[in-house]
Image (cartoon, rainbow, N blue to C red; front, side):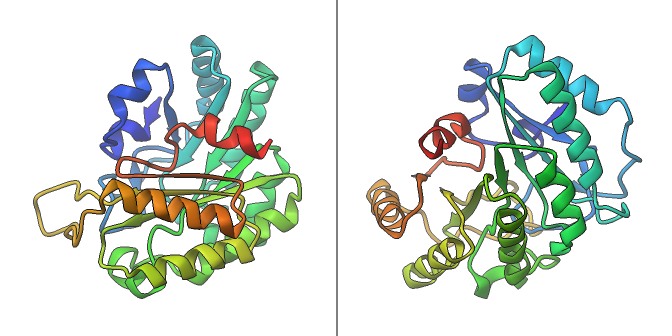
Length: 257
């Protein structure tokens, strides 16, 4: 099994692994998109492995996980963009670990309702899709993504699964302004987003493929952003320099339940 912990060079890897927590990355380790903040390699992916859902469920059972997080590379090459494989993994986990809560961190699926419905109806507790940055910086940071499309993905997930807890995350330090950040918070609340993560962008390489860090936020600014987000109505907020989408995912989900 692949983990996004390794593939994305997460700064929390040793902390989370020491707590027997990991985020499984399905559908291979090669992405069809080239985002300029991400360390995951871009290349033509291999076909999905039919036994991966069962292997994932077996690994989660052996680790005795109580909250399982599943993410993937973008699979724009597949007819359903990987939605069916996500659903198969959810169902396999449910069969093996009926008491565990399941969180999925999905690509935008181009906001295709049929893809989002397949994942939502499989029954995860948390449906996560990250907006990553403010609208002005999307073309620079996520050239193959669209801000409005990410919002539509979250809105459709909430409509298709009213009992779903929806979640999103944003990076800071890419050149955004405070007002732009707060506008994103408001946009996320407008589509019913329940949980929010805010973390410092860290350039994953020394080369030119990744955008530079424009600013490092001090801890007190993360605390202030968390306070404002909670005042806007987010049920759970994780905000800090090393916060990532799946950081303490179980703890962040608990308040929503």
